[in-house]
Length: 166
Image 1: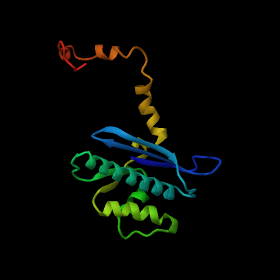
Image 2: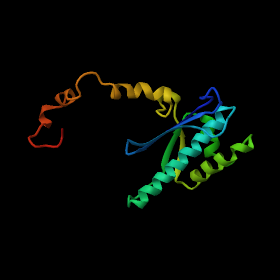
Image 3: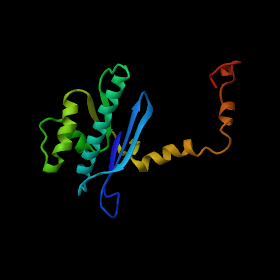
Image 4: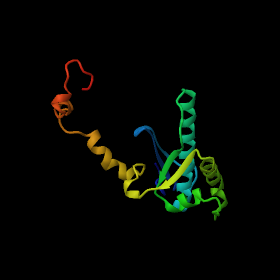
């Protein structure tokens, strides 16, 4: 999942990229950093975030291969900007600004090779958006009470003597 927050820094005007990478529904990389360039439109900052997400995904795929993990299929990237998803997936789309070219071509090359797919999701469910992820993480990070009480909420049939299920 990827997202960009345009004009995040009020002093420099730089956008913030947010990227979450999962392996089998487990988050393994959480990337949040100010972008190197100053963008005047959301389209440019979202494409910079897409390029960085592709770089991180390709690096993770390579690392897993080095560790002997077989990689089957493609990596799915989800973004909430429909224009970036459309121009990243269609080979005949044209850019209106030249400086978006590097991010566009890097992302487009990974999609054309079949290693990555870029798909649209609504912004309300995009976990890479820092405004959306906080309400999802708050119950996990700030559980009230004793965490040992979570064990008592389990099914009593799961409690086998000497079991590692707890």
